[in-house]
Length: 311
Image 1: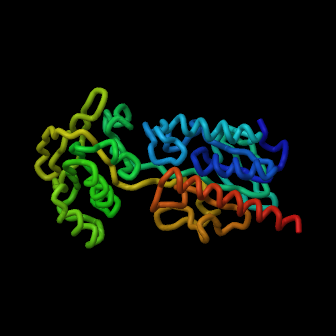
Image 2: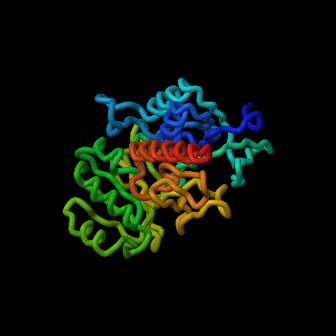
Image 3: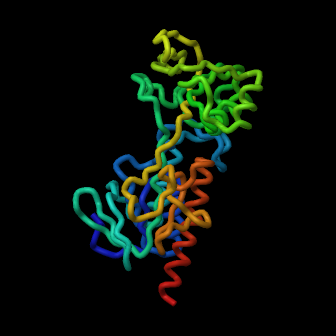
């Protein structure tokens, strides 16, 4: 274990594209770097099958493989990898992090890259069919649903954006919403309602998903009559929001109304020497490539901050 044996220049919390990119940059800048990755390193890309929109892979690459490559690249530069959770940050000079289990570690700077998880429906077969027709990102996975019929669950701007994105690929998009009115902004509602490929099922919820190797249909329950119907489709997109992994930051780092890290100039938090990168602060793009870009920015700013301490 590394922990209190030394004070790191940079301590990174997380294990997705933002965390690994930041580590590659800081380690190459000769800054002692540790990643505290939790118990399942890799982030949301572990739930993704093929990634075709990350530059450098002409045939695409499987999400878990991409994460393994990023991790191996960081390890090549002697980044310390620790598969443990951080429960609390105690700002100071240096900063102290409290590790689950009672130990502590210290660092002159911290990069928070803990990401955000999609809210799922909690269906019996949801986990089994993840990345086999179930997705939470039309931008990432829409291409794989060309000519298919897909279902989108949700009623906010994100759901309408997902539905509209999917119309570029799918033959038909059915939006299932719990109410009879949408929460989305008027302009997004109008775009979706006017689109010839999009239809709506109101006052209803998806209560099961079917399929062996791939999604073949869903069960839709009318919430007013409790009537259930089996509905054939080849994809299920869940667009009911994301949950940023920021519970451990409350009271220390400023968060916005949805729980994301509140940043200025993309990566700066309210605490000097603590930066944020990727989906933990980004509720708009949520892409591997933008997270990696944020990781680069956070690393460069951490390097600049550490240089200023020596002046």
